[in-house]
Length: 634
Image (cartoon, rainbow, N blue to C red):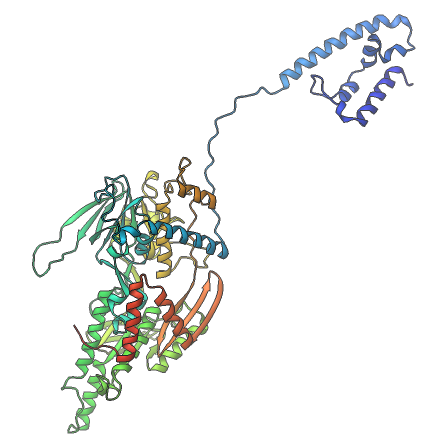
């Protein structure tokens, strides 16, 4: 039966369905349509107020019941309002906002890496332009605030080493913000890919090297080598080089250098301690001193093979001539251990040199034309394993065509005075003794002594594969305490850096990797990132123009280091080279031959660190081509 009460409720529900704006709560958490359905006395309330209940057909005797219902309705409404006020959450004061820790940046793609590196280069150029007036002497001395004792407020960065990583760092770092102290036994940087050329006189040592003080005149240089470090007190102990060995006697002094941040870029050494006699009887090719000694030794071997006691004469018997020839050939035999880029390039350069000095009538050692021999010993199944498989085969073919005796899958058992003992893999009992005049060890690397000392001061988890120091994406090694994080950075060959993006389990120990790491570390330091937090980020209160520029670029959080592989080159003699050019994972060119040789020379010329070096190297190439290689020993 449709009573006026139910008719009123139905009418209100229809209106609410047409216009939802009527669902105002009127002080209640429930809309009116919900409250209407939950209150059976709704019609009585309206009738008492003269509303829809005025049309009721109920008898007048029910008015008393209506009055009691109206009083009950009001009590119910008051109770509901009280419950609703208790149900509403009380407004609490907002807690103080705490800045969220910055999220770690994602590794960039190849295109992003190119764009970022272009912007970094622009930033580096602006920083370098600031010190041009001091480099050229236009403004006289540096500002008075730049004191070498570290009292000018700049952060003191002690850099150990002068190789690829250290040289890139001191070239890029803003010395107006930090004080750089370079510690190295060598006061110069050397372009190591051309050491093989310097060892045979194709280029001169000074043409491919740059003094540390010339690379950045605003750095302090200490000629010595680090022997110990206290990572908690931030003090490194340096043993100075003895510069007057022939004049003064006594042990070189030892000094202590305090630092705010220590950059370890000491590189590595040749692993010549794994085979008996290699350290005592083999030469190496790791520095200018090694190239100089090798160049002298090659000349001495040729002179030794040209002595009268082994020269061929017409009046000698056949037995004596054969004996002399055998001795002459053993004196002019050169053994190179290691078939990587260093060994392959040295074999190619050395064969070019020997072909040059044995030319008929004009060669200094033309009489040794049929007596000289180069033996390249490699334990693997392919030469230059870093290259593509097709290029490895071309390298082997080119070297053998030039006359190099390549022994693959062969181990060196012993190195002695004038001989090497070798054996094929799998035939360890069949040992062959080869008489040689000179042995060069170019196989494997090992950590230098200071790296081993540093690892004793760090937690056990800092020790990595091959005696290298494990580092994170910002070159920070594990430290004894959290507050020391970022006070020691390890770069280059001494660092074990894991980079999944580049396709390597660990980054290789190459000049390209070390150079990119040094430049990246210089930017981390110069930009003022807080290296004690992870990830490092700029200070929120830093409003310098550089900080605004970095925030505009989205680099307020320090980017992780990402190696951009640009390829590799290697010379294999006879005017032929290997070239594998790429950008990240994108291959550009893979070729072997004369065209790659032109590319090899062009790239190495452009990659020289200064215009002076480019001019000198060009002149050396021209001189050796026109006049031949110099055989004098000074």
